[in-house]
Image 1 (cartoon, rainbow, N blue to C red):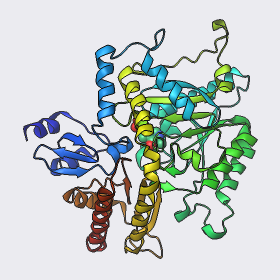
Image 2 (cartoon, rainbow, N blue to C red; image 1 turned 90 degrees about the vertical axis):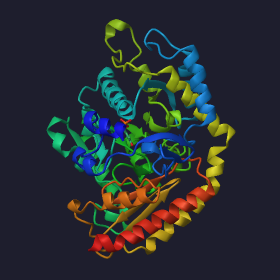
Image 3 (cartoon, rainbow, N blue to C red; image 1 turned 120 degrees about the vertical axis):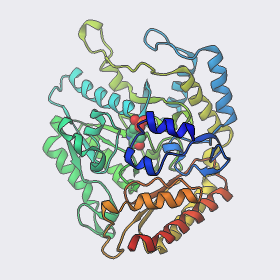
Image 4 (cartoon, helix red, strand yellow; image 1 turned 180 degrees about the horizontal axis):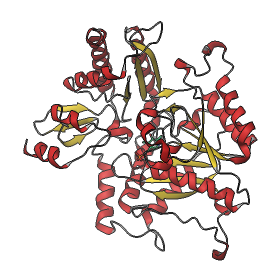
Length: 450
Ligand SMILES: *Cc1c(COP(=O)(O)O)cnc(C)c1O
């Protein structure tokens, strides 16, 4: 109680209207294990959103914990310019060995937004360094999300979060997103001919000489509403990037590390070869902050020159490649191997998807979408017209409150209720989470249509 009073007095929480906290204070968590978060009284909550999409192998994983403890005894932090250390080197080697395409170099930072900022700056400076100074802009997708810094907001497309800041953004061009349930081209998915890709190509035809790169989240526009899209879109966007000589920047901050059933979401499509590749969130198994931007030798080499040529990448964050975070990253990849996490997921994913399919019966479920261990239900007021609930109604909040009463964290994205499950989840836990979530949405029906 005392602590919560102090929380209310001193703390400003992220993505939170602090006025709401007076009536609805945050929940004080003091330990966690596996997929469960516990408060002081021993009440538990299923961590159904993996602690903001970070946790991979469950909380308090013994292998990750002991790696970090061991690293703490040896070296907790050191400047990463002029110095290096074993955890960063081992993690770099491991990441490069599993990365898609021609990614051979890694630049560390300390969160998802910075991993994207690094990619944007590398892309931009690559073209400056190689004599294509006209290239200054990026293409990104409506409903795409790449972080909360001003640079990353400039290439994001989630208006609710960003609109107020838009006068501060650098110019970028938005392509319509493959949001099939609400097709931006007004087509029906059965015979759309992927018209949204044509819109992207038209943008490239018009502007490619000023475009540095296309940035997108492969397979799932996560913060935009867990919009799962066809892999053909990714393949064709990648082909267009190559055809028009712009970089393909893939942001796997949310989708990386097994979340979609593959180590990286871009592996769902064949032969995707990103020029820049952003990682964070699950990179440490979800226990410490770390970001990484991977790139090709071709891009690296455009910066590699005598100092006086001024081609250096002058960028770095203070806690870049923190040794504790890197040691957690190494341990997390070892857990993937030892526990055969991705193989185990092959059994769990069909169960999860079958459970998600049942949601389609619900009167409120306009769209149901899923990939790997993430799944979402878009709530609508009226299914045939797909008409949503008004913003003021705050239906997501209502479902969230009901979820907490049933030990489930259904933190909504607008009118989208989603599960973003830790990969350590067991069959019984999965069934319980699905059953409870189903019941919560079903029972919200009466309230929401009042
Ligand atoms: C969360 C997220 C980011 C930003 O990461 P932060 O660590 O919150 O800055 C960037 N891109 C995607 C796809 C994300 O989901």
